Length: 75
Image 1 (cartoon, rainbow, N blue to C red):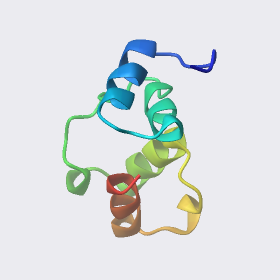
Image 2 (tube, rainbow, N blue to C red):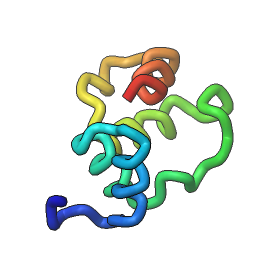
Image 3 (cartoon, rainbow, N blue to C red):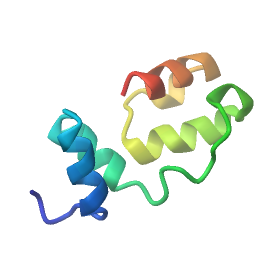
Image 4 (tube, rainbow, N blue to C red):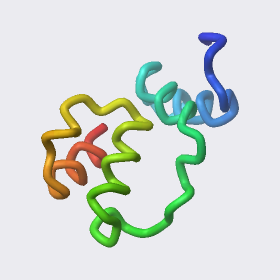
């Protein structure tokens, strides 16, 4: 496991569920992945953009709110 993982417990749990190393690391390295329990549809585009930025979704600056929701759900 790479040393730069911030939340190793979460990383291992995600890997155990079959998630790729890259995706598990991105999620485990977000500051607080569950800080906003609201559904994506209830959040602003700016909030969704910040979440996409934390996770490392490319092309986010050109995405609409709907595009960001889709990208976050398919990460």
